[in-house]
Figure 1 (cartoon, rainbow, N blue to C red):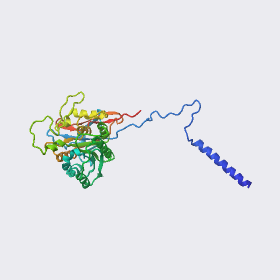
Figure 2 (cartoon, rainbow, N blue to C red):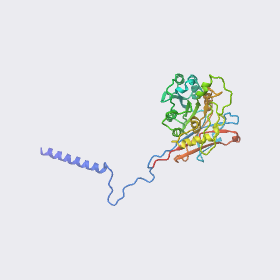
Figure 3 (cartoon, helix red, strand yellow):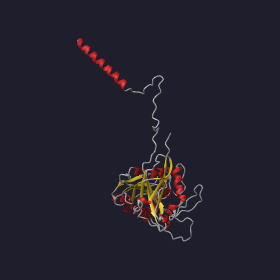
Figure 4 (spheres, helix red, strand yellow):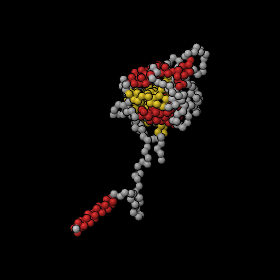
Length: 384
């Protein structure tokens, strides 16, 4: 019995010593500094908070000659790209070949009821002209709510069937919330890197230019789109135009015919009307797009679709006069598959504020070419 008791006491002593040793090696709380010694400080170069950094900037570039025809014979060496004035090294270059990931945003408000029959027939145009054989697409409808009608698919029948079965909802139109949802969906699609090809992220909007009830702000949504390298294209719907189709043609001159969207005065500038012919180079519209991204909490009074497309390097085509909804979609598809895609990693990717992008062509006939690209992107300063 005495031997058993001695063995148990010895085992208890060993366990106690092991416990003390473990506590000495791995304390559960912070170490208390010795008297007179300074507490250990984090390294000076350790960031206090994570900074926003852009790893890749992608910009679509559309080049047209003096006759308005798209130019297809340019190479990477013919382009110069600057970010905040600093020359950039092009890491990825393509002419209309990268497959497309597209979200189709369709207004389903009761206000566009006269246009629904025409809209329901556009599915085949989206799949064949815009999406193409290598693309994928999703469909989102919006009125007072934003509803995913079809997730990403490469099956054209699913896209065409979804658009053919569009149903009208309430009278609201949460356009900005819908754009935000579309950008979020596209953010997860792979994009090109210097090492491998990816997908072009395209947001196609078929809607009026009116927002009613969104919680998101246009400038805030456009910041998200720019950082996610999403290009926005839009087909502007006009219910006024639909109503006029059934009435005798009015030949009286109008200051603002259906389908045109004169730009309200921009601070510090003179009001000038925009048109489809000069909207890409209209300095007021470009300034409005930059202003919207820099002042996200202020209302944008200009045409929201024009501002959104200009801010991301896309195009807005209003369906009016001789341009039907079908023709507008066809024009957008033709541009997407004949434009250049340029990517670069900015040399000052961690500098907050607005980054201006400038794309120039360096060729003998450059003065006769008209270039359209996204104007820039905005980086939020890191919190302190």
